[in-house]
Amino acid sequence: MARFIRRLTNQKGTHVLEPKTQVVESPKKPRLLDQVRNEIRKRHYSRRTEEAYVQWIRRYILFNGTRHPVVMGKPEVEAFLSHLAVRGNVAASTQNQALHAILFLYREVLGVDLEWLTSVVRAKKPVLLPVVLTQDEVRRILAHLRGVQWLAVMLLYGAGLRLLECLQLRVKDVDFSYRQITVRQGKGNKDRVTVLPSAAQGRLQEHLKWVKRVFESDLQIGAGQVKLPGALSRKYPNASREWAWQWVFPASRHYRDRESGMLFRHHLHETVLQKAVKTAASLAELSKRVTCHTFRHNADSRIMPRWVVASSAFPVFPLADAA
Image (cartoon, rainbow, N blue to C red; front, side, top):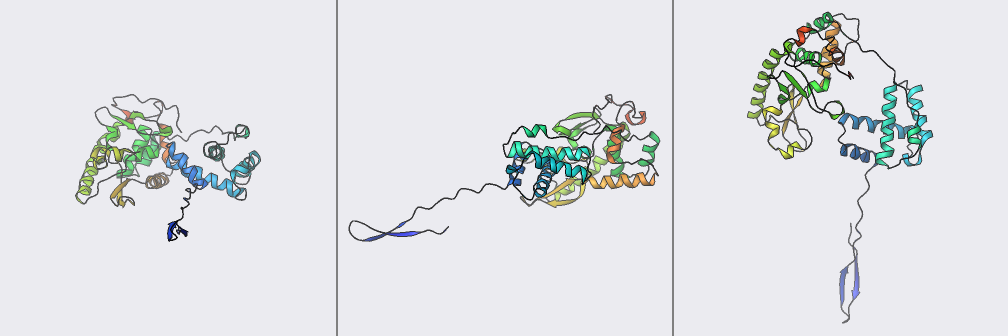
């Protein structure tokens, strides 16, 4: 900002230059979507929740002619949700996700808590039956999988893991002595313990030996780091290079962090396993629609075959929520 100078005359008649007081501009208020991101990150919501909420709020604003949400109300919200259901033909769960994003915008970002927020009509979620595979169908799919893909699917099936819960496992989360797997920050940001299927135990041990060799070779070239959850990287600066924190299923390539410039290794991308399962189900000639989440539907003790959970140190508890 340019400095303005004015000329003054003192008592002796000489002229002096005195700088004019600068006007300090107040920092600009973040844009609306940036405010949304900040509020979401304050609450430690997942990255995917952030992406979904921002996308729905953007679509809500564009649908109403880029008007600011402050000047809009219940008619605009219901018109947008009706448009999603009638014109967009979206599922009830998708419509409710859009509603939750808009409610978050008004309540948490704009600080607006009006009566109409609770009276907005919500879509009724239908009761759907999950796709459950037979033992023979699971065997046929596993027969067309190899290596890391076979092992990951066996954990989905035998331990009842969700896709990202499986791929985000770290070495410290697998306990061979107790034959159990600890899931960190699962759905709802909750931890839980599940069984380590005996059918996968031997292959998992061999797989971790290979992962450790890769990890040691990464250390020799100045890599071998992984991202840590939350602020643990500041609390434990060297933990990102420790064996216990490494991914059970690491990606095949490194990436360079923009902030630090260091080489990191991410976990295996979910699309790798999704494509492998889709291909295996096609080769097995199954008439059912099979996804990675389908294997979790079988993770009930009444359905799980004995060859998966045999000789487990812990019983397999029925899953109350298979979602």
